[in-house]
Length: 422
Image (cartoon, rainbow, N blue to C red):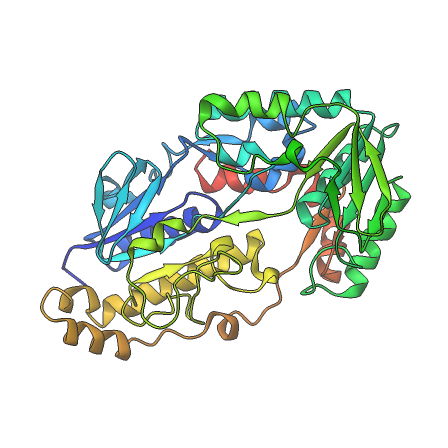
């Protein structure tokens, strides 16, 4: 049992980050009584991004999506007072401390980065308070209600989910989904999964434009892609990308596509700019093409000088098949197990004495490959409204049918509430 003081900082309070906090709190209660956990999150409340799609068409559901973090450490036992929540945006990462906006510093022995991704065209993902997010939902929901002809650009899980929700809620609207690939979703999923999804959408009345790259006929209309300040978000949602007006877009084939609301569900952007202050060796810490943090199979940064820094969830460089809630949970548990191995080898203790001794501890710590250890295949489920879903697992299909627990009915909101002790 480690009697020394150990500080673990988790940045990002979504599925991966909150799961990591729970795992670390268990370690502090059972094995490391002086382990302290700090969660750094830019939002005042947990934002249930998994249910973002439902929130855009269901106001009552949207009200449940903002869960305070004030009960997160309620099950911390006698060590609960050792843990804390810091509401701030991460600005820079250094070898042994992080900087947050406003100039504050938080020192750490181990760092878990779980900062996820944002969609520039879905401003709710950039909001920082529950009130901001509610305001954006109201504006975006109003646009969906007013539009009669809606075009979605991007056939990933978000675009498909939105199509399904709106087609079910508003069956008289004309809905088109354009996707640059010949099949929906990504190459990590089977062709059968994509075919089933396409057939279900067509049956719901959705027109599919596959293998078509769609761009605005007047590009300047969508030129704003930068992050928005909270005071400008509502204006953006109401008067720019989400404004209902006659629009014309052009497909790669030259086909003209007319609509009165175009919703872009492409180009999710990982939040990893904060690593530019951390010196890199031969391999960049952030992949230049994808913007994701490059990690080893152990989920540690690729640079061997930083064995105490892990990246989990959407922000890391694992395949797209690992970018689902179930995978985020497994990654968090794997990373915490890796931290435990480093603690057992006294990495955090020896780094205070000698970099050479610390490096030796890191080499002795056995941290297996996540993709090898986590051998079970994650179930991928895409909801198409409240009563339909496509899943990659035969067992999950039977389980959902037998118990009436289709993902589309709740989008895991009950699990999120339980996770945050609500």
